[in-house]
Picture 1 (cartoon, rainbow, N blue to C red):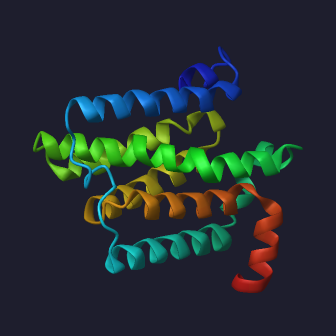
Picture 2 (picture 1 turned 45 degrees about the horizontal axis):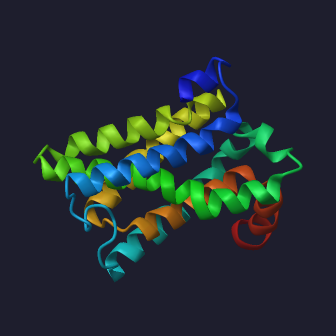
Length: 190
């Protein structure tokens, strides 16, 4: 779907229905193959996992702020009139579904078949980065691959779908919403 959007064959608006359809298809596969709910990110949360995800999120925000990369990413998303609706959908649906599709499900499959975890981390980061190629920005590809590596490794250590989704959402909102960024950077980062 991402390549179809990239080459202009289908509208970018179809990415969310596609992601939702993919999510339900993966849920069916997960149930059919009886994948472990802990590896799917529905296990118990831990204090250590919470600390790791908080550190990763803060480090990511500081990197985004200090590198100036935010100015190069997603400019077309910041100028939309429908920004509030997009942020609500992104926060409540898109980020958690992306984390389930790109982190939780692959980990459960890799663990079920006993495949080497390093391949899981590389697969997860690559798939996550490729899913964002339609943005047509090299910084986005680099950032999504780098964050994909970090989130996949953290998810391997602490498979918690809620925590990784929150981390993804916070960083995404900071990248794509200039009003929130300006407010937060004046208070917290300068």
